[in-house]
Image (tube, rainbow, N blue to C red; front, side, top):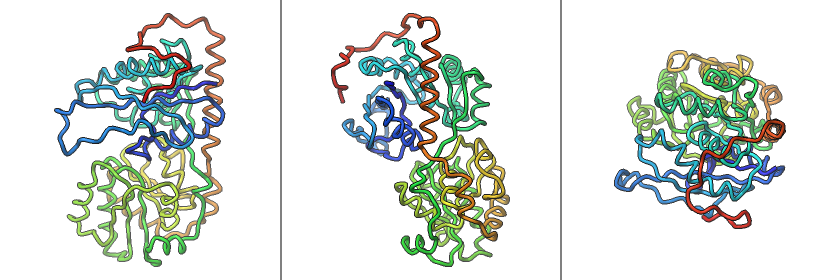
Amino acid sequence: MRVAVVTKQFPNSQERWLGHSAYQTLRVLATRCDMHVFYPEATYPSFLTPRSGRKAPLDRSWSPEGIDATYIPYSVMPLISRPLNGFAIARRLLPYVRSFAPDIVLSYFVYPDGYAAVRIAKALKVPVVVTAVGSDLNRIPDALCRRLVRNTLRDADFVSTVSQDLCETARLLGADPARSSAKLNGCDTAVFHPQDRAHARESLALEQDADIVVYVGRLDVRKGLVELIEAVAQLAPQRRKLRCYIIGDGSDRELLLKTVADHNMARHVTIVPACPSGQVAGWMAASDLVALPSYNEGCPNVVIEALAAGRPVVATNVGGIPELMNDTCGRMVPPRNVDALARALDDVLMETWDANDMSARLSRSWTEVSNELFAVLDQTLKNAASRAPAEPSVLQPSGPTLDSNQQFPQ
């Protein structure tokens, strides 16, 4: 099976942890398929980008381990071109995907990536599977993009989502119930498993007697990080050994540092740069609990990883989180509620938890996720083969079409 993947939910030379769940699934799938990832790299006019915000171009010769990828630039205008980005990606990537001659196209993120994947697949007369990951359906920016999302979900041969909650949202937006289903994310169970807390704290030079709360993810206020800092500030007078480590990178770093300073929480809250999975597992092992007070979610990997590591979770009852946990492995609270979050943190810190029991109940590997995706791709191919021939191409390639024996240009 030759699988062309169209997505920017995938690592690049500058953000090597981007698209973690997609990469981990595809890395395993690539051992069973002939796969190539086509990454649309948005490039902005220099006169519209502040000097402080300019980034060096991606290293287009770089690919993450285990997967071949081609990084293809396309031009965008901030906000203005948003409704056209899906079409622009399709036109820019079509010659590359055509040269690869796939049997099927797969995409992560419904718009613009999935929209482009649908157009490319129609042009090549092959089926397409679109995967919704969370924010692509939970935070649609405007009415026109909502229409394009609906068209993508309706026209895809199959729609996969990372939680049942997200699957219901996709169906409300136009996905056919007979051609859509949920496939929960997983984790690397060789990395995330119960480990000795004392040893982990010694390795990280952390206090052995501290109450340690860990957050791992983007530094984004929509992850409930301001509320987390405020909840720690509520508990700190009674829990003088309370320590919260917020691990990640993102655009809201300065705002969060200011929030820490405003609440005089520098002794209790530390922001730590993003780190590889092995180090994340060490932080989880050192923790008493993992917190994720997001405003919305799809199927957050951090919850799966924490439970596989045998650590209780305090999270908001949004998106697919209730599908992953209940009071036997932590607490769920409403989003944006500092008082409820503080009470939940305190409750979990007071309780004794069985790490091995939690890990045994939720240790879903990436191999399981990849096997389920392979089954979807295989069945979608069989269904397409049983139908009438596809309609004529509606999209013409932009630029020269590559011979199938040529290498992709960087």
